Length: 146
Ligand SMILES: [Cu+2]
Image (cartoon, rainbow, N blue to C red; front, side, top):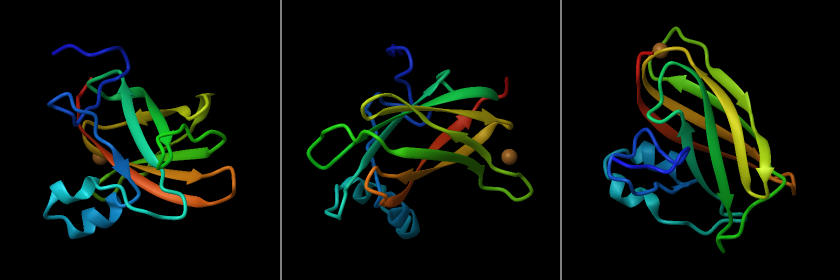
């Protein structure tokens, strides 16, 4: 399997980039039909977050999460404040957190420390430049032991 550096996604086995919308959280609640989760939905500010993880595949230790934000028209969303929070689905474990830096308009990068192997959920807390707040999330499955 060939990947450009930094463009891998841990849960991406087929090479297609997964586009995450704010509707994903709602879809997780519906839970049963993943196929229905990727429709863009109209909202005040529809933001699409694409992510990548370095190293890829992810492993225990320090990682960098790349985030690319685009609006409904596919334009980069600049000037957002992004805090990420990595959690696992079992109890008794604190979250890992990271603050993103904007590398170029719409492209952000945040450090995250994977303290344990397994499946992680990354919560993305967005504050847009107009002050609007949004929450998104994506999964990083199968973080490897180091
Ligand atoms: Cu854990």
